[in-house]
Image 1: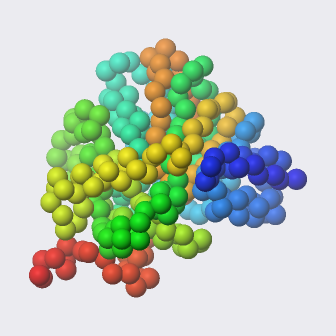
Image 2 (image 1 turned 90 degrees about the horizontal axis):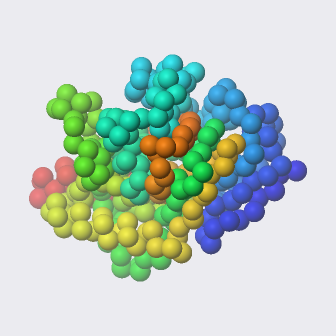
Amino acid sequence: MITVQSLGRTFVGSVTGVALETITPEQFAQVEAAFHQHAVLVFRGQRLSDEGQLRFSRMFGPLQKRSNYARDRERLTSDEMMDISNIDADGKLFPPDARQRAMNMGDRLWHTDGTFQQIPSLISLLYAHEVAPEGGNTEFADMRAAYDALSPERKAEYEPLVLEHDLFRSREQVGFQEFNPDVRALRPPAKQVLVRRHERTGRRSLYLASHATRVVGRGLEEGRALLQQLIEEATRPEFVHAHPWQPGDLVMWDNRCTMHRARPFDDLRHRRVMQRTTVIDTENSVDRALREGRSLLLEEELSRV
């Protein structure tokens, strides 16, 4: 029998009584209901094959394909899996000057997966094969609770705002700037709403990430000051839960209403081998909000003023 125990003050549920490798439709219905309630679910002691992780993930929707498939396809069996590890295709630790190691440092900032894509990520599912003996926790922040804590005046102020998200913004913040114009052209910025309404639960949340580079309709510095303030407020201790990893853990989170960040560990001495599958959304958050009849502050409107 499936049971769900609440771990955090406002979110995160620990699920027991199910083997995800052989989950049944009836069990999935219970898991899905728990997921929409908690936004982050933890499954300990799983024995998942690559196909088992893919099969479970696809039950939530179509999966995103990774663009760097050529780099790690010798390690992974599918281009629908992302390698969240500190080892190369030969199983060796990344050296200190490895490009991928430098890129991975951006994951230590508070972020939401895929907001820099026109069609953002919906759900992320991360499975741990090997973990470091100490450090390396993942912290999650409940953006629903952060939104609920805002005053009515601030909620009204933020409701129409649109943000521009850029992958290179988060990487630049950790000192990685080795991107030529051709690489940047492959990842153009994407616009997302600041306040997102969850289409399944109806709850509103802040939709933030370290990828957010500016606020449409505001000066660059003014907008970035607001973003920094909001991220600081949304990651206060009462909104945050830290997950200490064990081999066999699968943790899934809802990118519509959470942020997360990886915590440091000694990645030059210890292996950390994890694989992520990502359910992709069906449309851009701005397009969805406009379709729902929301009034947003868009550049097209500003240009006509």
